[in-house]
Image (tube, rainbow, N blue to C red; front, side):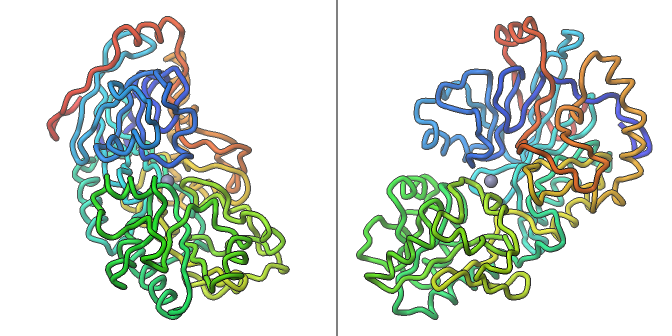
Length: 445
Ligand SMILES: [Zn+2]
């Protein structure tokens, strides 16, 4: 490998690895984290191959997939290179792929995956938060740069959930203080906070420790808290606390209106979204029933009929009589995404979120950081990949016209799958599997 003016040997062939995608046809499967929009197609009955994940994700895994064959799980140590022996689909020859998980600071167990091999370097962020001021990001920055060793990152698959300058919000530390301020300014109210089945634990811990109270969670969530080591801050007894963390799907304006008939209650929605929903939707579950998903409420718009009180960007917003939306996000805001891209300056950049509506191809904003190289590689890379008789990673991940700044894609694609392979190749993999070993940091292909 050389500098950014040189060309990578070739793209990774399809049929080798998949990240957060669970259909058959790959030799190794990588899970970034356990939110439901990253596990579509994964079930307790899934048996397509070995599944690689972080240690914490492996510990949480049985909570979500209780009957899963755990012998298929392979734990990867965060911050270390691991070597995996795979088969090159086009030639049948063995090849080494190296992978290093890096903390994504999104939810417990979440990691990015940095891959390297004959295809060059490729980073798949999964969902991630890149808070520039945080010590964790500083160590992540060092780890990424040390791992790349001044070599070019060929492809960056990027969490583009908030890849738009209008998405501007503070650090989670600041947002946590905002939440506590809301709670303390309502001393006679009960408080419900919308959370997912995983994530935003730091916010709840901050509330618990700052106010010296326990936070109610539902029984399954308490089990997860115990696995994470948080035993003293949470309870399932409603009588011992006025602060309750409830499933996002149950957090509705109707719920709040119903609760207020018997007891004064406010709701707090931690989310990076600049507004929550249209007023006309308030009789239904305005925040959806998602898992990860700050992003599921993004079908909302700025309909002038809504009763959201929109303050300046990054501040608390009021929705109706009872709901506060606080800019606490597990995803990176635009400035953080920009900082991340500027750090890595990849040749190719792809958004991993491509649902309809407002998601934007990251190239629209960051082409100047990698655009000329992208154009170069796009115009030069295809013949080589055709020679291999298959698609490239980029072909498999791409949807819509990447040259169109607002390429709206019809369906959400949460991952990449590096090529479909023949039935013979699938059978070969089933019989041989893939082998993984730790690799020294200075190992190279
Ligand atoms: Zn997520």
